[in-house]
Every structure is written in structure tokens, then in C-alpha cells.
Length: 233
Image 1 (tube, rainbow, N blue to C red):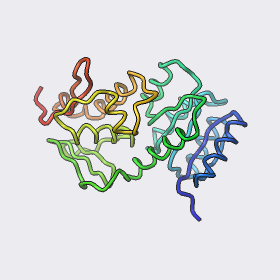
Image 2 (image 1 turned 30 degrees about the vertical axis):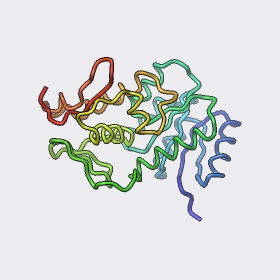
Image 3 (image 1 turned 90 degrees about the vertical axis):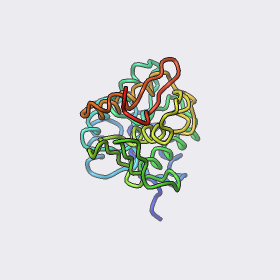
């Protein structure tokens, strides 16, 4: 029987890697396991994966560098695993295009939930809804997981698309960071203040070719974000 999900696990701790691979395998997830960054890039080039589970502390090429290289050619969902407690490391990972993060040690159920949520978003299995969401010049094509602004396709990761969708479906309504996280991944736990800020910043950068988009996603100081129903400041 074909596995439900194909995962690339990049982890140099042999004991943790073995445990994680066995855990995922029991849940119908086929795991390719590598222990350094260079091997991760070779594996990702040789085969298409549904998700990359990427440790930050790796030999030969660290996880942040792997994330940067993967994002040059691939939109595969990336889940960072990190034992670091420094918020700056998480922010850098998100800025480089990681979709989600999970701190070590992690609960097995949490890892599985994060992986499945990322894959569902990437495959477009977000529920039976309208084919598209349109707000002014912005159009989100839900089945294809693509976003267009005034006809120009935006190069979004699956997580960025999910955030933009949450905002677009509630255009004109202010959402807190916690509400956005819960709507996107089903929980606001283990969030840090800048995680949504970083992702919103990346979305804005990708919209920025058109100056009219500058006021599309508005920051409501002390509250959160709102996608405007019109694009006037």
C-alpha cells in the first residue's frame, strides 16, 4: 500500500532520528532519513517529498542553510525542529521560508499533527468550500493553492498562502496573532510574538511589486492584522 505521506527527516541524533522514523512509519508516513545538510539537499533533489522535517543543528551544512537552498527551487513544506530557545533562530528560519517550527523535546502527537496540517495545506485539502476567494485585486485559487494580485502570481509557501487565505476570508475584520495561528494550524500554543509578524512581512514583500498593495494588509497596533476590503490607505 502506498504511504500517505513522503517525509524527508534531517536529524543527526541517531537515537532521536530512529525513534522519529519509527513513530512516523507506524502512522503510514514513509520516511527517508539523512543526518547532515548536504545529504538533505541531495535527497530533496533526487525525490519529491510532501514535507521536510529539518533539524537546525546539523553537520556539514546547518538547517538554516538547507532551508535557504531548498526555498530557491522548492515550495515543499518545511517543519523546523530546534532545541534552541533563542527566538532569533526561529525568526530567521521563518524569514528563510520555513513553514512551521517545533521545539525539542516534542510530544509525538504534536509532531504528527504539525506534519499532517502542513501536508493538508500543501495539497489543498482545506475543506469543501468555494473554488476561489477574491478581495479587490487579490484572488486566491483554493484548489491550486495559488494567489494572484492583479493577475500576477505570488510565490507563496503553503503556510503563507494559508495565512493570506485566513485574512482574505475575513477581510475587513481585525484578527489577533493568536487567532491567525489557531485558524491556520489549529492551535496558538507554542507561539511567539514575532512568528506571525515575520510571515506577514514576507507576504507583504511578495505583494510589493504593485504599490497599490501597500495598504492591503493593515497592522492594527496592539491588536493584530486586517486585510482591507479596499486598497485605500
